[in-house]
Figure (cartoon, rainbow, N blue to C red):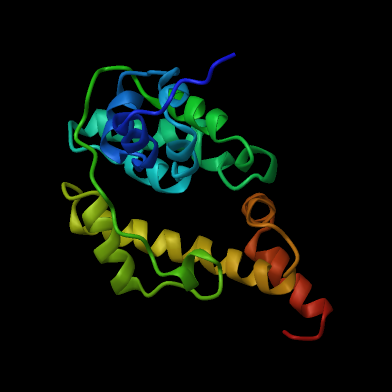
Length: 197
């Protein structure tokens, strides 16, 4: 079999990075086969965490914003750090496609992250930082709702930081589940049993 010589266009295409905005447009139209059209090099440059973050935030009606946020969380985000899933970027692509309502191209926006120390459960976020963060995510929400949401996040995060410290070998996913099962009273009782309260 004679191998076809590569043209300059072929070589340029191979060197091209994964185009985030083309990818988002493909996800918006639920193009499950788009990932297969990428070159091997582009597939390697597909960063699931980054595109999931972009995918979850749209500038649109409140209902569509909520849909994208909840759907991306339900179909993709909660599985993203699972070891078996991480090995299959095409599966992650399909999960992201499943999260799209298929209404055509949307304007996706970047929402800034919380600090790495907060997201890795090393520290509890400051109320001021959370208010700023949630104000960017929910620009139409009232100051009172932003305040309540920030305070609730801090309460929940305190528990996760505590569990991460007590059980340093647990995976983030396990801490998430455990934080839903353990009450503040359980923690107080545990600390009493250890002689710390």
